Length: 388
Ligand SMILES: [Zn+2]
Image 1 (cartoon, rainbow, N blue to C red):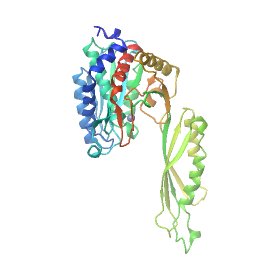
Image 2: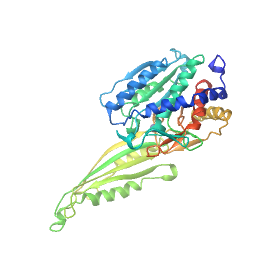
Image 3: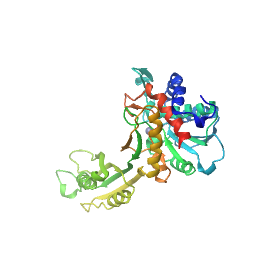
Image 4: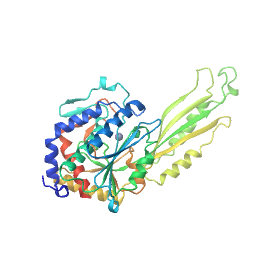
């Protein structure tokens, strides 16, 4: 390993991380074994404190963004403290998971057949461990070539309501954002385009009446919402990546009572930012078919799309070159799910997503990462920090 990190080749990084593979697995396992469901502040804050301690141990200048309801968010600045010509890189991740407390009992963190299993291992505790490992490697081999900020947020899996403002403020001071979310597929494809995500709730109030004695006095909220749902479905334009899907429906009280209430939960995804206004306008234009019913619509677009920009494509080209030196033919992918990279990209900051682990089964009982891929993924991240 040469003395200066700027001249460390991807292959040299790979060799370094290959010798560290078992330790990296251990550090991922440690994070997984701190369960951290998005809605459990006590559990989240416990892991936030552990992360803060680890970041400090790596030489980071740590700032804990304390929250009243959400878990605390942890920021650490590494490397040179001056941000010359805005060269800072933001390494972005979340430490919350979708798994309720106690999941580890049925889904223990374990190694089997070359994979590490566990709740949140792929999405995305491995990514956070990679970031720490890469920062440690730079510390051991001459220091970071530029300022790096690592941000671990607590609420990505439930919409990032409290962390968004922090993520956006930090990204604005950065030359690029590397998101440590899972890669796509066994080849470890990066994500250069993600759909924007919206969520609406439609509530209908009708008039209840005896379904047998005086049905004419009732205004059926379920009939009304059924009408509205088919209208909402017609807003979809799948050929331009705009999808609309009613995924929850509830209503009524019993079969002989005309339903006084009904509600629906609607998922909206857009590929292009300019479709945000179109779909919002259409959703707001809904009017009751039965004038005795009233509609109440709440919600809206939560994440703008991560659109493939020229700057994002340039970042990907750099990643592809580094991966090629490591013997991997790196692909880029467009995916339907959003991440915090959607926010940073919408601000015009070049954003590369999916730099975390290679694995499968995010949000499912077989969530796992491929252990053999760990060294090259860490080498890719290390190479990118110096190489863009
Ligand atoms: Zn995630």
